[in-house]
Image (cartoon, rainbow, N blue to C red; front, side, top):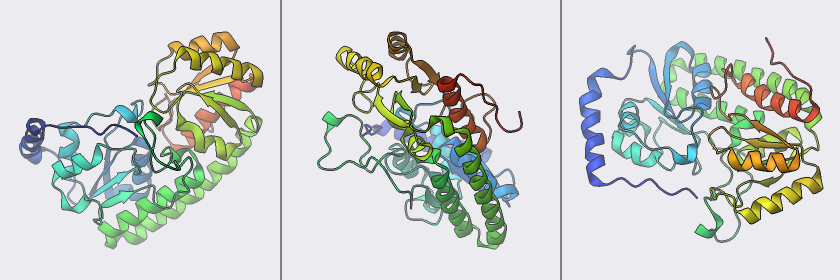
Length: 320
């Protein structure tokens, strides 16, 4: 489980002052538009698609940022103080969010309020710990793996949750949001069909990943993650773990090591050299890699790079 961000009294005062000072300069560019704050670029994309011209959406995290090391900034609290809707991944993905919600002093977006959307509600979670959770298990997610947006079926649930939130805070625009929701759901169904065909060569393949980011993706598209560079979530690999992982990869003829751009390259490159596997680095969020501007782009970029690494055949995204 992530370590909670600790903020002493003085930084809290700084945040409060920042909110007051910046109050006149931020907020609705258009008073008729809802101001939506999301934690991730993926949630921002879905909120923009559903909200259309009725919303202005901003997100707090950079698409190539390690979500486990986000530092809460005064600007985060300022934006949240103006929000009509706040959308988060939920579970224990954003441990810093509750502190910022307190600092924002915006009753509309507190937990349980109409303007608070936990996008994880209704997601069939995987890798939920059983038994007692301790620090010795690393930065374990106590509610289950929160990287659920990489499965299109989960994306449909996210869309439904965001649409429900928008309808709550702006019931007069419910029909508009519903029409956009239906259109986006249909598009995601098309994306699922397209990507299942694209990912067909991955079915049954065994790969190694750096972190648990890719579990939902693997489950949906039929490949298996048989090991991680992290011996435990958030724990750097030891020499013994690397040696054991190399032997595991050789025994299983693993062709790919999959990693995010915000993790270091030294150990993955070493293991790739020792095993002959290809190192595939790809961002798990919209906007993280060049040209990845939509949810379709995100999935085809990740899956295309995996297929290319395994088959040697280059794939192209739709529209290229």
